[in-house]
Each structure stands twice: as C-alpha cells, then as structure tokens.
Length: 181
Length: 192
Image 1: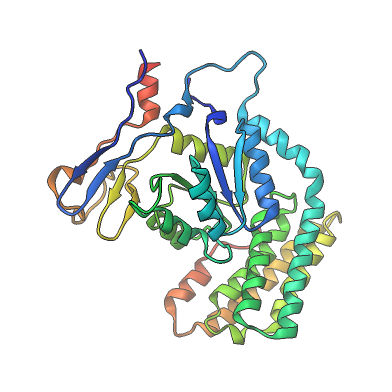
Image 2: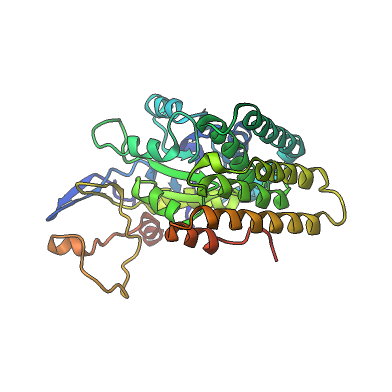
C-alpha cells in the first residue's frame, strides 16, 4: 500500500486571502505536515520560495504585485533558482478551460479549482509526489510534460521533432513502488 | 530491496529536451501500513476543518463587508483600474470560499459580478446600478441564509442577475464573437 509521509514534506502556501491560508494550513496539518510556510502575495511568495526551499508550492492565481501565473513562470526558469522543478499546485476560483490551459502552459503541475476539499487537495499532492512527470524544455516552454497520456485517437501532425521523442514512455513512481511492494 | 535512487537524466531530441529531474519527493513515499488506530489523513484533515468551521460565519461576514467597502470605493472614486481590481478580488474570493464556509448559494451571485467585470471590454461602461444589485444580492443571500426559502430566493436572485448581466455583456461584446461564445457557453450560476 502506497502512502505519503506528509511529515517529510515542506509546503509553501501563497494566497492573499488570510482565511484561505488558514484553511490550507489546517488541511495540511491534518494530513500530517509540520512545515507550512505562508506568503500573502506573489513577490513575497517568490522570496519565501528561495528562502525556505519548499517541496511543494500551493498558490492562488489572483494576487497583488504579481499573480500566481507569473509566479509559476518565474519559478520555471532553468538556472535562475535552486529548484525550477518544484511541484506547483494552483488553487483558484478560476475554472474556465482557457484558464486551465494558461496555467498548464505556465508550468503548473496540478490545477485545483475552488471550492477546496480535503480529498481534492490530498489527491493533487499524492499525484505530484507519487507520479512525477518528466520535464520538457523547448524554445517556448519549460515545465512538466503536458502530455499526461498517449492519446491513440489523436489525428494530426506530430509537433515534437526527433524520432523517439514522439512518445515519452514514463513509469510512474506509484507503479514502481507497487512493483516493489 | 531498497528502491533505486532516482537520479537526473536529460535526453536531447530535435527541437526539445526531456529532463527527468532528481526525484526529491521520493523521501515522502512509504509503503508502511497505518498504525493501529491511525486515521485516514483525509478524514483527519476534514475533522480539523470541521473544528475550524466555527469561525466560518464570521469569515463570510467579513468577506461580505469587504465587498461592500469595495463597492463604496467604486461609488466614491469611480471605475478606475484599482477600484475595479479591488471589487473583482473581493467578489472572486467569495466565489471561491462561499461553499467551503457553508454558504454555497452565495457563490453564484459573486460569480456573476466577476463575469460582469471580466467580460466588459471598457470597464467605464459597467453600470454602477448593476454592481450595486450584485453586491446587495450577495449580502442579502448571506444575511437571510437561515430562512426556510433561502435557497429559492438565492436561485431567483442569481438567475435574474445573470440574465441582466448576459444581456449587457452580449451588447457590449457584439463585435467580439469569441467573447460572446464564452459568455453564453458558461455554466449556469444558479442551480436549476
């Protein structure tokens, strides 16, 4: 049975709304996490990200100074900070498809639409911990592989060039652990 | 046997690289079974949230107050980038929090106000009366939440708000078919 030892994970919660930060902290402590750092805007969040080196960043979208989308783009700069591969979960009241696509294209790892639930947050965390995706770097994108599944029904040209790269095979850690256990 | 350590690997292809970064989160994956009497983490978190819920009504009240102040600021200073942003943020927070705070029927009116602000191409043309009607509705639905007919009242109010807002937005976006598609194609804000 695969479990997550939340006590070994360090979280950074970035949200300008104090009530939402309190709710997130309560849920994370409930899961068993001890280390939860908070920031109330994108700029403070980026500073806290550099200082605390979190394992997982949970960020709101709409925030003052710079928003969650800009924050994700700043984190996903190879060589510009200590961990451009950090897992980013975007928690937001925006749920329209174009917003989800914009978040994905900014390098967000998981998207969670409000209203928040313990189950929804837990599932996103389990996914980023136990099922990490490889990163793809192109001229215009750096972030988790946006192809979560090989779509056998896809009709159209292959946009990635380079033979083997047409299909990136990956074994989720979840499966590796299951195979061992 | 211990699982193999995940190490970084980079594969270069025609126009992109595939990077498997060192898996720093592996440390948190365990196959250790639950200890006797240990709760499911989701149930534990839900219980912690239930304990916190005694504060939710006061939080909802303060969010409604914040929305009202944002509306008053718009009335006093006019529709500027700053006053509109503050109003949008206040409405957007209520949209996202209302259900968690135990007032799900409040969310739809707040969402309608977000749509009004977000989809009006020239913010100076947002009718202040319509802003007032949205803010008053959000506050009224919250204030009257314990009434037996609260749900019907909320549905009625938000449906009418949505109709008036859609009518205005369609007129304002008559030269933007893609925006109109987003407006009319959006999910209903009030349950049928």
